[in-house]
Image 1 (spheres, rainbow, N blue to C red):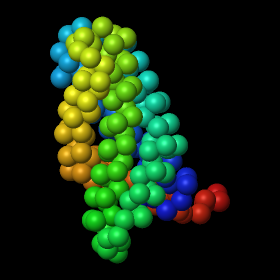
Image 2: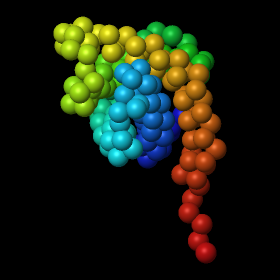
Image 3: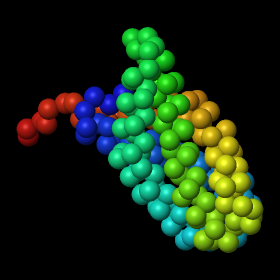
Length: 163
């Protein structure tokens, strides 16, 4: 887990990148848009999704989720509890906010089903949460924590070598 603001920044980049790639792929497949998107359009969607998700995670959802997670009464000495509670609040906040982005993107790209806006939003939130929470807990969370501790955290905490 990150121990400084700099480490939080790198950890956030890694987590957001993985989640955006997976969630974008999931939503493109779920909306039957895989055959209609060009590679350029898909790449632009990934970049836009990354930019929005990173800003939302760093400046809104992340700080709120941490405050909520650490305010709850549970045994904070158990790392697993901390990870699960924080993941729940992060995924919930990101799904609620990024579903607005996804709804706008599907409307703009012509893949919106035409249902009411509210019904479409809640449907999107449901499907995204059902996919994102297990993805976060079972795949991306462990993978990013492993890669972060192995390749990033050790390099950031070492003093610079003078040659």
